[in-house]
Length: 475
Image 1 (spheres, rainbow, N blue to C red):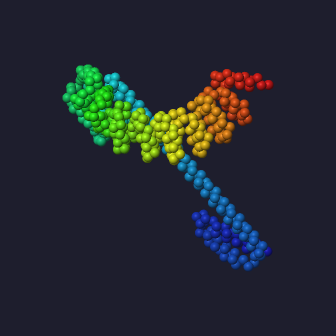
Image 2: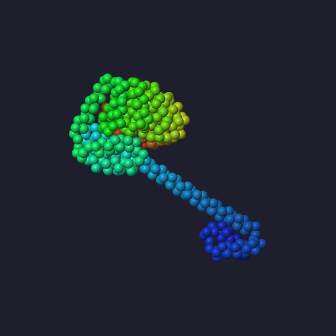
Image 3: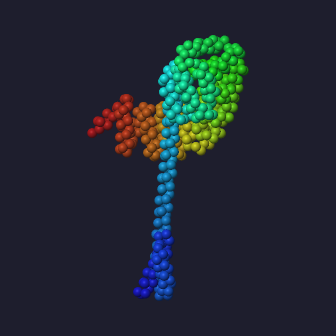
């Protein structure tokens, strides 16, 4: 029997030695395992059937343990991979937020610079455009041009030339180069001093533009084109473009459309798009669609989508929402449809959409358009938790008797803690004390009830006050 036990031990030792990963073994250990296996085979004739059964059971247990270890390692690896994926997603979201903040800073500083130019505060304009230039964003070339423009107005000709040189070097394909060349010629033709008469001259030009607006002629279009191609201030050029938009002649429309297509600096292009939407007819909107299809400028395309909303071009917006490859533009088109109250179109889009971000925009579109029905449907039936939560939150902000009833219904039927919390917040934001008191009376969870009572204590409502007195008077 001792021989048999020795055989079993040898067999088990061989199993352990052979099963261990090769990477964990030394050469001596591998040799020992082979010798043990050979010794086990020689001793096998002395083993009884019972002992073979024991060995088999030990082998099975050993293999099960090894499988359990592999499964545990696989689970850990899966968890690690999931954590890495989530970390990457969080970092991407943070980076997107940072980029958005930088963009907002850039546009804010640029607008401040433009406002300073309009009021002839040249030093302030230069400071604003310097902030834009430092960010090196999409407005940097424009900021360099307008900084040089302001420096020229201050009589700082060498400084203006130096700024233009940076524009030429760093942005050789900028659409401000034509304006910059014209400004350079003007700066070289003047002395090193500021020219107050030039400011007075520009003011008189603005007054003269009003006369052209009151008496539009074919000849005046050439004058307006000259102003738009010159080195005037943003205010002067904007006024000239506005006067051009008032002229209904085919020639004026052609000039405006050409500027919208990019035959001018981007500032004028954006304004031309706006004027075509407000003052143009079907042909103008068709031209905008042509510009949209041929451009890769994200901001310009957003402006055109807004123009479609202003001009009531629902079909063009719907087409962009359905076919646009860029999710940001698709979301913009959806948002504009929401402003137009195109609820049926948005609902149809929602059923086909795969992007969660675009679906969120559609939900916001329902909110903007006041569609309680669609938001209620989504709050009840949407399977994606974050989308259902957004629908509930938007219902709360809308704040009507009808939305209050829906929110109470959702609270009673939905057990998701986040959804229920959103319902409570929605009733609080909308000032629906009656519904909140009703839920508080039935709530059995002390923590949730405490939250409800806390919110009721901040609501100026007789219903809320009566309920709080009721709590105080309990023995």
